[in-house]
Length: 87
Image (tube, one colour):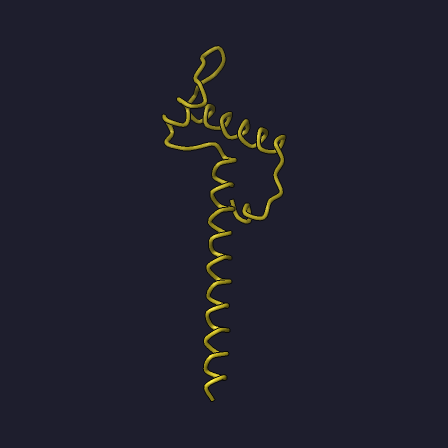
């Protein structure tokens, strides 16, 4: 899901992605109508999660990365200011 951390996603997009994902998993497993299987059971069988949750996790990972990077920049700037002040 390259670049998914930057996607704008509303409720309609979330539902569409999850529907596509569960439909694809059902096709891969050979589950066709009238056979039924809940999404929770489907995710459990395939050891996966809703696609929207994967994207949410990517966004959080990216945000943590950006926060850590910003903290590193602040530390370097502060260190340089301290060194400059001592000179």
